[in-house]
Image (cartoon, rainbow, N blue to C red; front, side, top):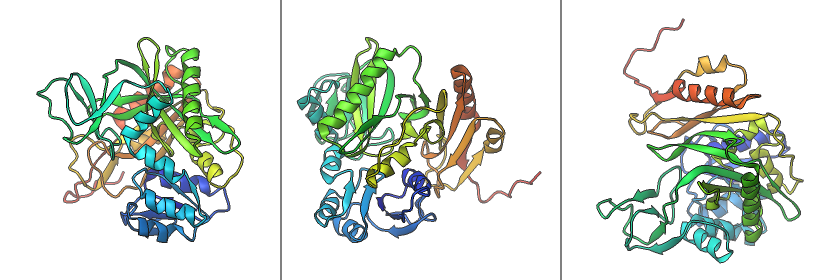
Length: 376
């Protein structure tokens, strides 16, 4: 199996893949990508079709851990008979937020009202660049003409929704079956618009009826696409309990990391089952409550600095806490450097511990000019 992209999602896919009799190869443009020490690794461009074809043509199957890949390269691999999951056509659509929104509208899937234009005529409005935005980048709320737009090019201009909750549902789909993981709620760091804590199940003030609607809409998106693979569907829940699709991702997702410890099958193992054309696994939650705490680079960290972690030892003394460091070579402000999963039987206790760990476990830059700390 070839994986296009060698970041943390690919790394966790490799870990899940140890349970299968599979050889993995990874392509990534960074020689220090998180996957580079864990598999057969090729350093090369993900967006160059010839490089993608040269990498993937000898594989039985190819999958992705990032959308920013050459669709033409994926299409050529399909023509050569390589099993490509997800398909090049689906990646091409999802790469472009404008095409995503147009698809939702055409299929009558609930989503915020929008236009695609380079002209700003009314405020407030949410401006989204069509390609390349992720982890909070490429999205900006413009409240007046005085706000500097992200781009002068045609963008998605979306109605500003008063959001009560942000929920994700991860759907696995093959030609024969569809399974959805229980919905999870994301709580965002407003400074960088990146999730800091993910809780599963969501807050009790999101009714079971609303959660059922979230799952039904997510499955419908996958069905309307005729999608094969793992599809993360991000949804808004409004103050009127209206459910709207925000956007989709054709891969494993940050909102599903807790499934490693808290579900019968993790999202990573589930994707591999689809890639290997195996039956889908049980998605039942095996822990009553779980929360993911993203370990982000500190806001004042110089971009590209060596990483240093604080608070990890104390975190690992606590029952029900699981550590995942991604092996990234450098840290930048709000960069995802790892995560902690907290599992337990009491929701309030799990969330309180998650909040405590968010405050205590930090990733800062390592001052290589300073003397090393004494070991106790």
